[in-house]
Length: 572
Image 1 (cartoon, rainbow, N blue to C red):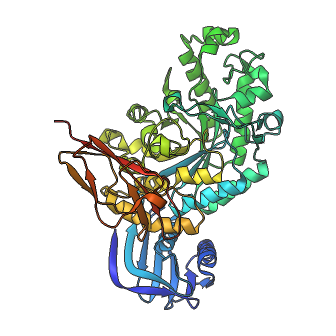
Image 2 (image 1 turned 135 degrees about the vertical axis):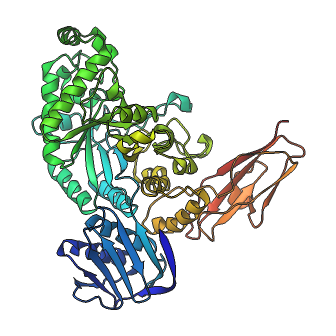
Image 3 (image 1 turned 90 degrees about the horizontal axis):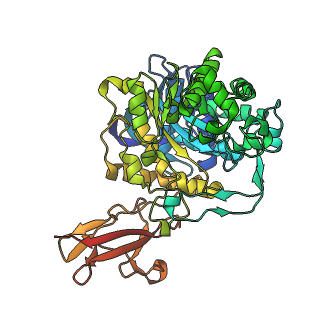
């Protein structure tokens, strides 16, 4: 809840930062780092005895729920109250309402905010198995997640394309499995884009020291890291290193053999190291998209199935998943897996399901009293195209525009009695087609802002209002060096019209942006397009449809790609 108060508070170099509990002293350093980077000055920090005028005060109150906070800005002072995590999120809100272009004095509007998240799990997954991202790049993503109050980083550490976690007992995992002579771009066949191979040597892995460093970096920002070791499918990198773990050591099938005791020993050894490095209660075991056909032909798998009375290969995978879940639980942890882990049999009661193939997995799992993270492809896969394929960089499979991400209602299809089992939501960033920091930014932002709002806010959806607030924040992303995708102007959407002439009114996300457009097919819009100054008149008197194309140039000089909408005559 936000209540505006008349007036502003001016933060200057004379402002003090105070805290009431030594455990919160680092909040002053976080704020000072922000002020130093973007405004060029730091403030004095001290413990609070009496609340002084012109101060920013962090007041610990453990009666607040873990992530709840209040932020009060008056002309005299700024006060943030909450538990430790709540104070941190109050700080993020304070930095978000600061104007991006001031120097010696920062004018903050007076207001009162009472805030708490809708879901306790607000996650982002990055696939570093298909494309390796450095420690510094991971930290940068964590910083941006923290800024938008996302609190779970799902680190997808292994794939057929690359094994990224150092395990000293199995050195070939990183000596061999972490490297390749090139990087594939693998759009879905449905995307009608050929698979390509860039032939640039690629690879890398994280040492134990680096993983501990990242875990601590995340912890300081109230982000839990959930590691994923994807098995029994997606295991090609492990099999390149240790072929005996497959059903046929002579060929890499990308799926582990579930009939060999050595497979279970290997996975448990890896899990031991994962638990040693990652304090998270949850360990993600994957469980998705395993090619089970190989198990049908494998004597070892068939022998195990006969011994355990398993009637098909679905039950064989279920047997494996339960073995891993029980082992993880014996270590005081919990197993999470993609929704295929429900195929072939019951899960252990404490297993967590990540519903990705749609919402059905979450509906079924919550109906069986399993905790669930909703992560359906249709709403939360940020590697999907954001606009028509011919105007976008290569993406994966489907079309997922910003407004659809924002529209997601995680509980809409969950029966009321089962909603208690929905932990939250997670956006996934798969990297088949995302090679490098610049494109990672482009595919992730601003859609991740919509994800953050869906996970945090419990207010009624209002896309135009969200769009305006998002636009104000895009200026901050520019200052932070984020290569976000400039979104379509509000009002640019496909239409079916009854009239011969349609008026289209456009509003850019960032105030002061210039829009250049055409209705005649022209794509060199900066030079030959028309500058938008009033509603566009689209003439349908002599044609059945018109494609309206535009580009946006922000006040900071950032230029969008071509954004399009089709206006058609209504069929009568």
